[in-house]
Image (tube, rainbow, N blue to C red):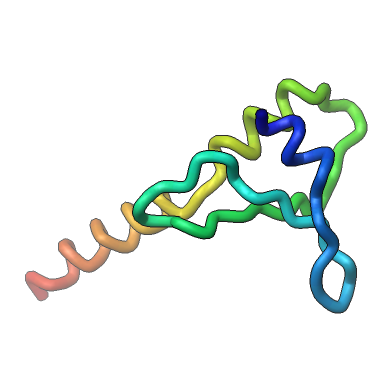
Length: 74
């Protein structure tokens, strides 16, 4: 399903970046969309789809949460 979304990307913005909408959004990211800024020709379609599916802000949010917890004691 993600391969179909990647193939049907829409161009947005000043530079025509191609954004793919995530097929299964979560509560944390209900309007999740991804943009591939540095495409690589050596990756096959399965690997690209896997990378798109794994993208998100959950790991970044986790780092910020841990940082806030550690610095709150100071």
